[in-house]
Image 1 (spheres, one colour):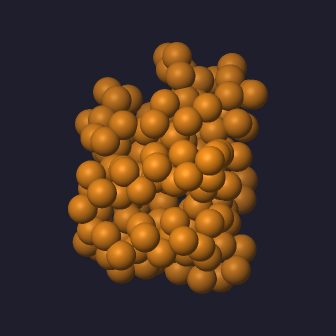
Image 2 (cartoon, rainbow, N blue to C red):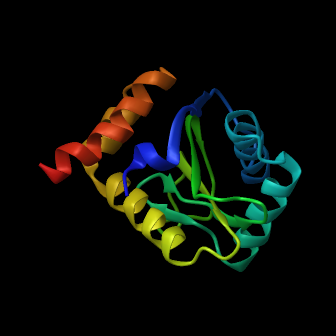
Amino acid sequence: MLISSILKPAGVKVVTSASSKKRLLHDLGDLAASAYGIEADMAVEALMEREALGPTGVGHGVALPHARLPNLDDVLGVFILLEKPIDFDAVDRQPVDLVFALFAPEKSVVEHLKALALVSRTLRETAVRTKLRANADAQTLYTILTEAQTVQAA
């Protein structure tokens, strides 16, 4: 599985400010709607339900919110770079500025977990996080995310 198979350029955005975790989840839902035609309200509700089970802030300023949705055929992702980090109840209590959300088909367990592991591995790399934070152009962010995997595989 490649990041380019779950993320398309239209699914990457820079957000100047999100006032709260809830607002950020709405931004993710809106981005998923514009990039993939997912119903925004359904996406936001699913993300909020998942966050209620436990926060998805994984540390180092990274959050990986994810949810399962009906009527999806494939795992899809959206990425937001926040210019101003926000509190996301992360495991290391650090504010979050790199957010990669995944939406998976309801019945997709294996593909959902593979995608989550792939994104987690990619964003665990200090060099990738540094490059992402140094760029505020959505196309450049997309390139960094999709090329990081190619470099790791080489």
